[in-house]
Length: 174
Image (cartoon, rainbow, N blue to C red; front, top):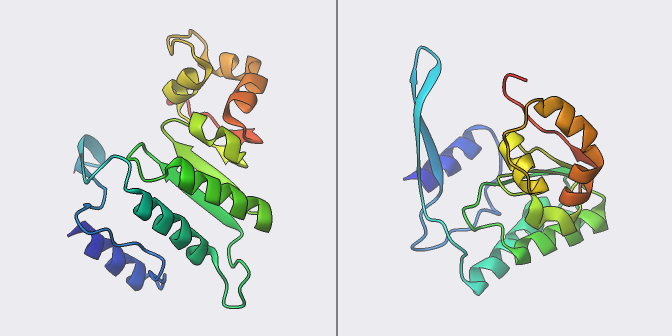
């Protein structure tokens, strides 16, 4: 079971799992890769997707606040990495709560998402789209001859579209 494997991995590394949320009937997302001599040959993803119930969204927002909490009631985190790969878990309600926590506690927020557009109003510190994700954010075709030059020329557009202070676009071989 992937949820138990996650809890075990956290325990081995001394990371508390008290803020993890168990959702009966929902399978934990897992990405598996088949490698040969260090090269990825295939990847397959498992787990449930789609927006969880209103109650689960509320519970998840509360769990996020708990995960960041310090024993004295403040926040024990300086940074948050939100990995949003479109599974439906990081809903508008969860993003709103994260934005409030970010503003209240001056957290560094890095968003790695297939679609950073929904994060615009959260105003992340940084977003990390790959080239196709950046092109989609700008509403253009990814078939651009010089991607690096395009990113440089349209940096202000990427910042405005993402709401972030910093946009780091990965360009594969470029």
